[in-house]
Image (cartoon, rainbow, N blue to C red; front, side, top):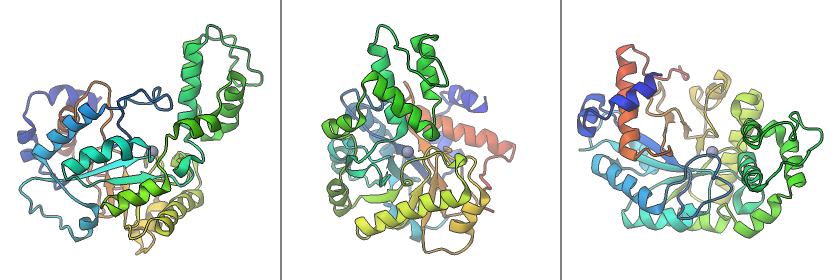
Length: 337
Ligand SMILES: [Zn+2]
């Protein structure tokens, strides 16, 4: 509610005025991918920016922020010594277009970035369950009539295609066997899609990007919702994915970005990686927008893929939302005490 209000009202002040009042030291933003063509595996999940719109976002960000390399963060102090606030750019899930579409734009503008990857998806060995759901929805939208799919928790013949689609969007990682069954019934072949379209980055592309100065971080093994895992499973997903990056991509800092969000993640997790000195992880990233935390090892990022909203609108909305919450002293994330 307050966020929506902030988004509307933020049209009034200028970006410069909001930055001057909020005084952010670093703003961290993330995307997934950029593509000039529709991507069926993402089409029904979130908007994907065209290279032109992404370049416009970057131009706006460069006007107001100084891009910083994540390697330099450990040496960063809390006091801002830059003329402009710092900008940390990252990409989640390791999609192929980060190499083919994003990299040329970032290189031409000398903007560093971090790519958070899931080891199970690198080299197109498997794909995120939500991408599987998107492919099924794409198939459903091409059918005149839904076939009867037996033994589902929802009868496909008794509901409309749009109700079935909405139900598909509620499925979780734990519903994977149902997702696979529906795909088989509708003739959606995930393995064929992976080998034909290669939606994810290869290990060689990751190594090339690392050689060119981009940073590779971990994003869990297979992108589960952490709120639905036990603390041991959460720690194992984070540790094993960080370890995979260390073993496969040389000279990377140990970075971890929560898949989906850090909501519902237990305090034990943060104690393991942040409160107690640990060599396993240098820094952890969440997805709760512009929200300073009580630990320099935990930083939230702003999601930048929203329908019909530019980077300027998103950043201004986030800064105003932060300022409004600050008035009620509810602007900090105190998960890590
Ligand atoms: Zn993700």
